[in-house]
Image 1 (cartoon, rainbow over the protein chains, first blue to last red):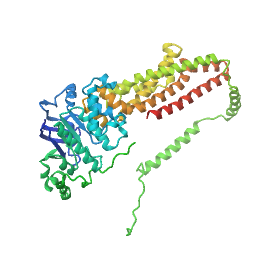
Image 2 (image 1 turned 120 degrees about the horizontal axis):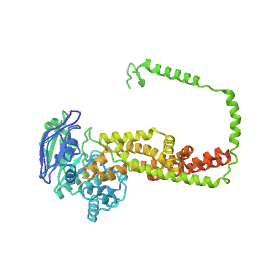
Image 3 (image 1 turned 135 degrees about the vertical axis):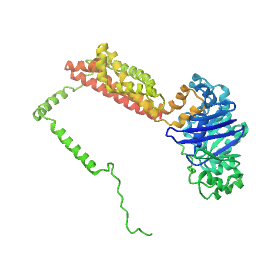
Image 4 (image 1 turned 180 degrees about the vertical axis):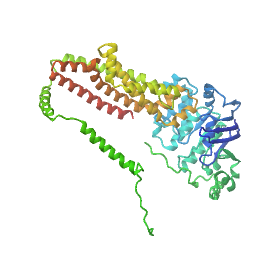
Length: 279
Length: 267
């Protein structure tokens, strides 16, 4: 579904954020991208939908090559790529419904979207999705009234209503507590499975990556240093990706994968912040 | 508890590290202030004479006379109000494209510089200078005042709009871009919701400013209540002038309270 060929990104400061990344993700595969902060995870997924312009290399979405598209073709291509963000990135002063429907902006004209007159099929689909994530009764609440987990669910609805082929997910759980993190990850993976979506999930919580993804790619300083199943993530591999540390405690709980109540060990880096207060 | 043998001392580091420069600046400011006060000549005999004249002048305002010139007061107030409303609306409408162009995160460099230029020029001149200029161009009357206030509004509102857009949350903007929205849709869904509450508040605040300024531009020939006020001074009808001032104060207070209320409501 998605193929990257020798993708490179050099920032204006001269930093080479991505070094010749080549990778292929088939339809229906959920791939976790792990790596330390600054490894280039965010840059990589943003190079796919060109929120960040790659310096060289090619990106194929199906048969379509994305790096050469003009602005209107790029807009059409972006409709096929849903994105889910670390800080949810909902437009806070719009309602939940408007946030979900904003995922259809690529499909409707300006005046329709300006007057909030979306086609009935879009509204039906929005309610279906909100029902699926358990938030249909919140449709007219303002996004900033929601808790962190609820906001991320709305973010997921916004991405899915695009009817995408690919999900780009940037640290979906970094601002959530451990339990909500698991629920959100499970939801994303279930939905990808139902709809046969390819997905790249940036995540720095190794444990969550191992629990939910069938393929893990490790990025270190802009280079792929690991690509394989989660079971093969050994101490040595994690040391390759993150550097020297005692990794045994991180790898251990993988065995009881389905045990829901295990609170994962939290790395010093991963965010333990609880839900944002409802304002 | 084991205490360290020697406690380490700590003091907040000074803002200016070089002590000579730090003290030099204080001394320099003090000297300049002393010199500036010294050059101001105050003729105390004239001040005492003026005090009694001032008292007579102020007494002439009382009691305020609303009735004998009410027709022209009413006319002036209505003229001022329509000048205020039209110039605020027109000024804000014109300032939106300029403000969008002057936001660094939205526009291209040449457009940015051009729009910043427009804002700088219109902010350089106070409304009264603009009014004098437009009175020379278009003659006496409220049209000149309307133009002066509109141009003033563009500078004020455009600059604040541009700054508010520059301060917006880039992640929300990125999210709307990532779904494939067009530029106009992006403005409507990502930018507008973020800046709207503050801009409504500032629009009402500008309405308030424009009403007060409409009294000033009238004095140089821009029409409105200022013209009525000037006429009453010219005729030495201080009691009518007092009435006009009270009406202006009343209207400004009403606007002040209602704008505070509306701003709290839109947040």
